Length: 352
Image 1 (cartoon, helix red, strand yellow):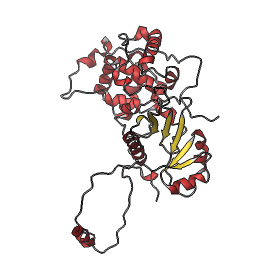
Image 2 (tube, rainbow, N blue to C red):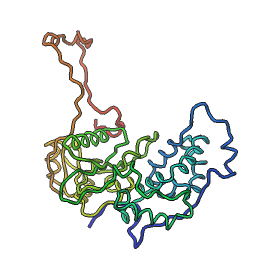
Image 3 (tube, one colour):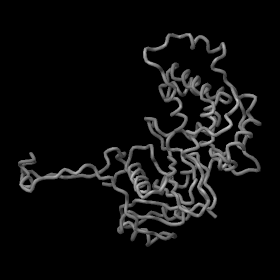
Image 4 (cartoon, one colour):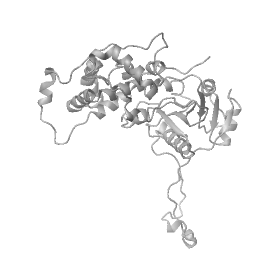
């Protein structure tokens, strides 16, 4: 049976990544620590965002958010981080210092980015699963921790990653999509989420990152797990559909009903879309035109599902104002072409 790609193969035990401790408070960093502080406080958030948005970094440096595994990641920050991301020494130092001061946060974020840990500890960030996960971390990394992990799961993480109640009620839906990439697909994902939540359902949303020159600064809030029995995938069938879980750092759960919510504008569906459709249980199409095109070829049931639309403030216009005409609007008599598109989409993504 065809499955979504996922980072790392399932094994007989959760992976224990090699520790490579780095102590930002050691004497080797004392010169940087004594350097004059800038007028404005420097944050390490930009360095953290670089890591959170780069699947390759998460695979090469799986413990890069934790002092116990930052020695080699520090080399990357000091070389590629400076050259490619324009990270300053102050930002790098602040990131390492914040990582040491917020170690528990780093453990939780690392869990949310490592699919194999999620496979073995599916309820790690809930009350019923934290103790088991905490004990495993302590057993394998305890000698390198700056202080013991708390007895209870941090509330900032438990509130948004609590598992479904198992009582057969559909409380919400999981969602995968490009939540951090300004584009038409991002808007479609956000509107679908808003529609679900206004209908009284909870959502657990996982961002599928894409290569970008400007690193998004909000991915941490889009690291939801598959805690509900239904997942809606809003990214296009190519190029990041089959690899969506892998790029997103999410383990694809068992017995999850998956729905592809796809937009398409032509009468014929590409072969690549037909191929990856085997990964889902059903397909939603935003218009009947799209539904007809997909029903002709897709191996899964296709349903017409109207898209969520956000309507802004509506201005009431008096009847007399509707007769202003072209000249009154400054258009004159010359022909005009009106184009409607998402201005934040990449030009190559837009149909002619």
